[in-house]
Length: 508
Image (cartoon, rainbow, N blue to C red):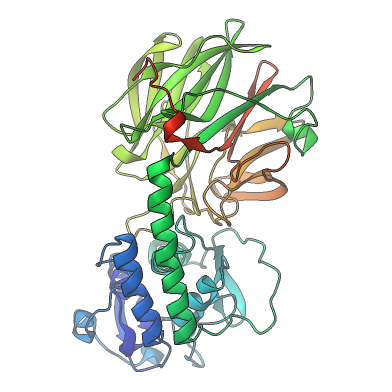
């Protein structure tokens, strides 16, 4: 299969090399480039902004936005795009009859300048691959680095590559292209992407970024950040899946001493007792362990005690009971694995039973049994980089111990607003409901409830039915996990933790 990559010779970036390399690695694909000038690059003032942000935020200088000489494309031959089987048009200027052309756009406009303009305008753009006016694949791009144009730009370039690769035909030879699950676009804004701000405005933006960075450093001297908190309540027969709103009674908070925070609450009812497992982040260590605390109707019985401590960061302690035993799949993306543990002395005594996935940066692995198979949901930061929260991958297995097989249509969803898991999936009648993180404003900013309309080896479809945000009944700027067990329901969100008020915990 001959694939021609249309790009602007005046702004070759590491992104283009990555995309060409990954396309060439596909079976029976030969890549050529059409690298004529297109005038689609970003202005010099924006490049200067990138340099300032690199210095201000300590960003690596070798990211996907790094400019490359045209000679870097030498391994790929140049040929007229009309002779290719498929043209991937990153500039938006290819018009050919009788040749398949995939036009890549951001909120309807092609080119990196359009993408950057949307980022500078604070949007989460819809990236689309279109062929003859029809959508081949689309996804809502995102980042965990809102407010930093360069980091956002690089994350979205990386996910653009993921989207293109995911849309390639099966075996990259024959068959119809397959799409990542479509997402609902943002309300249309007149005129499409705005123009890139003037040099003066970009200079003002850089000055504000520097000021914010200084304020952040001062804040971190005075406060522990980030700092999360866990909320809990008795459901009295109606949980958030029923209410679709914060309860009028509000939430009680699991206390911490300021030297650590608790997040990712996962309760389990086992042998008549509700036990809550949490990410226990110790500020002085800069990483988290997994801790547990028994709960009664009046709240925690004691304080969380460590139950799993490894040399790397742990979070999202997905616990479940099966075959008379309790199992846990904690997030361990810092180790590039997804591992299964079994409790030998509940709530402790955890021993590793299996590595379910390896060599993968997978966030918030969530298991569910459906349609006679086990399914594992997680967002993945693939080899090209990108955000941690916008690309949903699935695996399936005959048993929760494995072996796990990746879904043939991974990523099944690209959407910063609803890809990342936010807790256990639950059933209501015939419906499978999935808590999701809405990270459009920032990581973990809001909590969505999605109904899984379809899940099998052909794909996954979901409909986000509710979005819950912090407010008067749950203070803070974040809300990103939801779980329930034994009539007790738990969420988590952000908190402010002054360093001068913290007390040294006996656990540290």
